Length: 371
Ligand SMILES: *Cc1c(COP(=O)(O)O)cnc(C)c1O
Image (cartoon, rainbow, N blue to C red; front, top):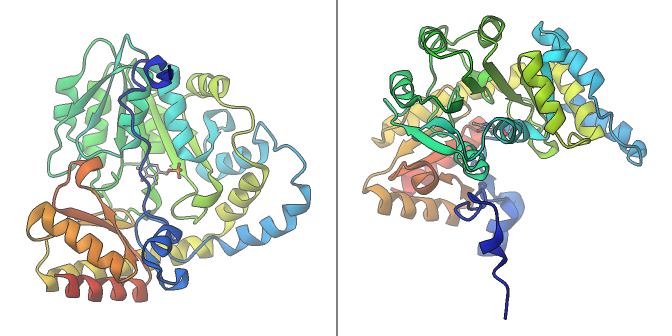
């Protein structure tokens, strides 16, 4: 008789589903036969300008050293980040994308005997990480689509170890301002760790956005995670980092897989960090593209959730049926956006990543036709 191995897994695993990424161009090519070069992917919040050219140049130079293991300590990249951020290197932990750091935090601090809080519509990796750990997931109702500190505090229990907040949040683009963040940290016991996921912080233009590096110096229970996947355009290489109290950083280093950040990822990240021209261009394109998309949505009579990131979730008439139809019409036109009804409880919405001016125009024209 066939063994049901799935029934033998750890508690928590049975309820997990694989992460559903934005559809890759190759899949749309297989499905509809469209030429890959004609496909516009606006589904994974990737940098529309591509990777930092400096990072690409470094990668070419390094291919001959691929037989070597990476520097397991990530010494140089940590040192560069420490200088760049004005924090000590012992506070920095590197990860295979910031995703690895989110998992390390839950592996290290969560178990079936405690609980973690995240918000409604929060980044889907949090439910996955908490679910895998077996900890109780406490989901705080959102306010105006975003994290609500009051609702989070109401859910707090004696056994709560972690609170996950994305600032800004994906897919809503909502953010907590400096006052809200400080009030939340002041109200929490110092033993409750706040994991503040700042994957998109480099795009934020709001003057009231919190200076979380300064807050982290005052509140040792504040852990920041950041990434090279978005602004720096290195999503394919998988490199992110956490900034944490040295004692938390030490815990994460103990749990981390030895060579989880590849040699080339470390070198490319180092180069990208210095590539201020690429960062500046990327921010400028995002700023202009956000205005372009917002005015396009307004012209089409669509509502959207104001976003501080490099993506916008917008609502489609006729609710979920409408969103499914518009999604498939856009696919037929070679444009991939992200459905957010199921994974993010945002029925009737779609999320589009901000592209170049040309990308955005093509998307808006196809969207207008689909409506
Ligand atoms: C894209 C994203 C990340 C980054 O993930 P990486 O593993 O660093 O590529 C983290 N958090 C949120 C909210 C994101 O949207």
